[in-house]
Length: 328
Ligand SMILES: *[C@@H]1O[C@H](CO)[C@@H](O)[C@H](O)[C@H]1NC(C)=O
Ligand SMILES: *[C@@H]1O[C@H](CO)[C@@H](O)[C@H](O)[C@H]1NC(C)=O
Image 1 (cartoon, rainbow, N blue to C red):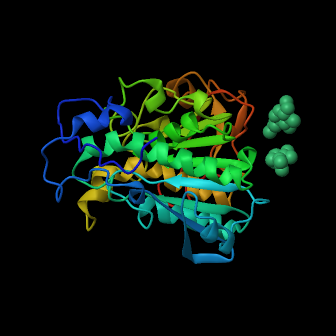
Image 2: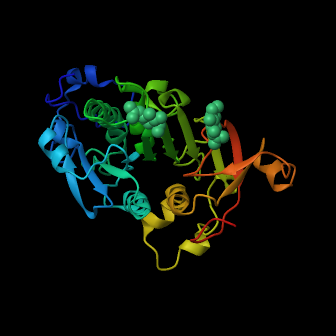
């Protein structure tokens, strides 16, 4: 793939993100490059490594940069997680910070934060949604490079929040060296992703095991199950406990109010990284059945870090309204 061509900036507000990167060079639009986060070159997607040896200061990795890789603290005997942030975010924001800190505290994992801040910048949601394809392809090339240097895909786990879940999906689907063991989708983004091809959105074919946590279903997050296992804490919808308007309105920022439920997905997951045996969820047909106790005898498992890789189905659970969220 030719990666240093300037690609289009799709500043369209009517078109779904269905254009693939190969055809994108034909889409060069007369846009204001200062305003529109179009793809410039491969440096638009960065990879930052954190390990127990460098828990706070990251080391930059890049495709084909052996010097940086061998000088880094990466240890291919440890599992590796690769985290894809959301729209409006960058690695040092919300989901990125929480997930990274949880894994670094565990101390047994290579944590690679994908930095696509410029391509996921606001307010250009349509462009950001399109760019998930590009980010995913770049990440796939990066992962293929790491595999050639010793990364074990059976111990490689991609985690993506919101639009990041679709970037992770594209990465999983387009890796050429095999299949990653797991992708976790944290409230995968819904807007514009209802009608795109499966290649561009999260689905069970993207990894050996795909688990999904839905917390803002039908608004910012997808409602339908898209993994092998789909967890719907508190029914999966907004408002999540603690996110009711009257609760979040005082003294908080606008973003917190809008995204409170959407953000619960990574807050729950991050908590599970450090408390794997919490968040007990029951398999159940509907939230209604769950609430009425009709699934009290059903199969249970943990949501999040310790999810059962052999399982399939839809699971429900309740949480507290603030951290720690899990109900023991
Ligand atoms: C890769 O990881 C899996 C699971 O931990 C392990 O069984 C396998 O032996 C590893 N492969 C290599 C080449 O180390
Ligand atoms: C999943 O299945 C494999 C093989 O069928 C088995 O070895 C493993 O223990 C199972 N894992 C869990 C968590 O049940």
